[in-house]
Length: 272
Image (cartoon, rainbow, N blue to C red):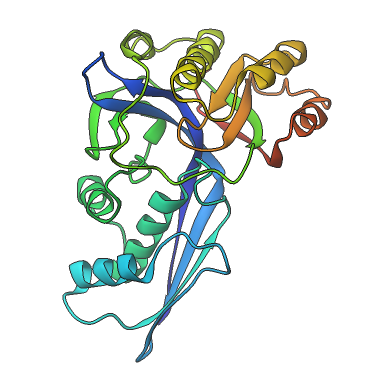
């Protein structure tokens, strides 16, 4: 019988950087329920992978995953559909691996086991295997939780992608120090302060690493009533953070005028 699984991605990070000058790389992801990867596996004697021209996984990764889970030669055909661009900073690769392993394995594994598999196949992962990924300070190069966080306040995000993006380099540890920002996140900041923390994380890392510049988006956001900017620190996603129900009609045209494409709007979090 065919098996199907769907895994939600994220939209950049609220924070990403080093916890101290020589500390681990850590992040707080921004969960995005509307960007998903769907996998469907159909049995058969041959082995195939279809991704619709949007390559997220390799046949080699899929074969290694199969052998790890099932201990025999891979067979059947896996169809993957990704709603986000690979390398865009929206979790396409981690979501695809999770969707594939849940199809091939017949369901989810404990989050720690899924994280270990993603790490073995990619060298880094997002915390999408956890039921509340936005409530974690996550070590993406180690695939483990560094700290739990209070629930995120309810947020509405409108954003897009500033270019084709690039895949995460697992060996890349050149990030800004965000230990002070992470300490504030652990206190459960309100919406306005959360927007300021996310903006500062994006600003620090752009100053160090380059890449898509969050400053024009943040400047537009000030005119639109946004609380701050969310950025993919190793991708192309950029968006504005709003209190729910306060996104003005002018926000979409303003972001398109700044060169963002594939706009997405979603709500996340839930604390009042």
